[in-house]
Length: 353
Image (cartoon, rainbow, N blue to C red):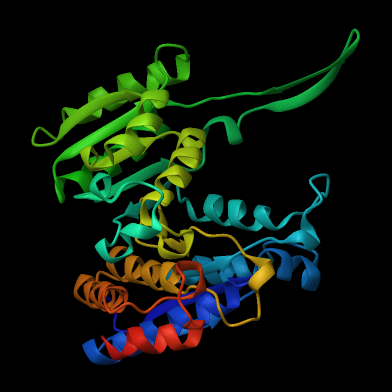
């Protein structure tokens, strides 16, 4: 780790400022214990940035992120900016940042806590041994292909194009294999190769990458089968890698295993060490500024930041153990049926560091 690590904070919209503030408190406390020096610099993104500057990703914000060692984001969006026809939308800030920083893979670990088994809609026995990581391709596929609308006789036609190059597939699959080599040595690659040509390229490339990692087992699985297995036998998975749209859908499905969106972190990574870290939940404007948001997803994202961008795995593990103890001790925010507010839960994590 550098002598002094620069972290850019992007609080964003809704509950974003509250949960980012909580994560900073925990980061600072853990850093003091382990002798790390961190600096923090806050900037606008999303709806808040649109209101202030007219852009969802102002130049000042982008330049600060490009100079940083890591970026911690809260959430973007809300009803105020929900017009789908608007030329400038909060989500453009997040997409633009991923593109500018070369972040092509989204990492989402899912590890249900035994004390929260009742919070999941699945039977508790189906959660036994679940500890998986999703690796979702972020910058290609259907969301970035050619799209449009055109008039046809008697109506209108719309199209979206699903495109991948073998290079785009290779780099994200290779990342998945590197993660698996440090875990349980299993990769499941999800596609729709029985129908889609892009999936056939995906499967072909994944098979080629697997030869670079002889100690890791590769399994191919069709996306519809994977959607079923994710709720029937989730413990069968270790590292799951898939394309952008499939990953978007399946990672939200996997979030149900943990019992609350407020618990799960994510990391967006590229070839370098700079990453973008954020909880998987949205801006939750209905509870913003009420002090009741669950900060655990953002605190856990801060732990990923320490592990992947700052090369401080011991400090990351310290935070993760503290979060586990808080949950095991029965401390809960309202989304999990508890009574603690954001600040009180944050203090509880700090006390257990």
